[in-house]
Amino acid sequence: AGLKLNKKEYAFAIQFAIMAAVYTVVWVTIRVFPKLLYGTDKMFLYGITTCFAFCNLSSNATVFLFNNTEIKNSLKSIRT
Image 1 (cartoon, one colour):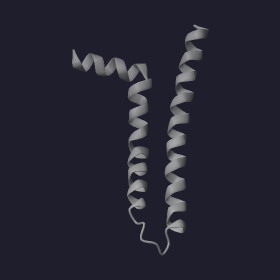
Image 2 (cartoon, one colour):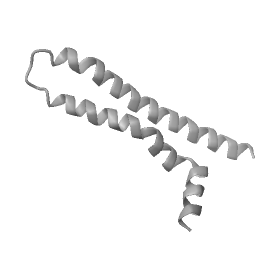
Image 3 (tube, one colour):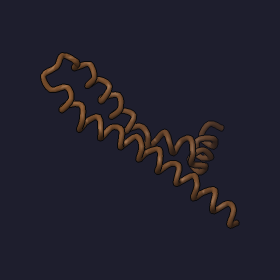
Image 4 (cartoon, one colour):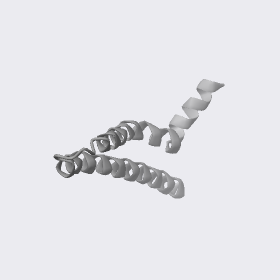
């Protein structure tokens, strides 16, 4: 039982790390791009920020779909 608990904790740690990394990248682009792009014509880079923001919004659901066994089992039972 101890080994199974460690694997579960490891999966939760990976989930948290992925979501924290995505959130950090989004936050940095939202805070830094406006300062870097002030007065320039490189407004297309705001599209990158929008894409990162979308990734941030969907990262939580995506990580749970791929790493959480309870959600995987629920999805399998829905399909069958």
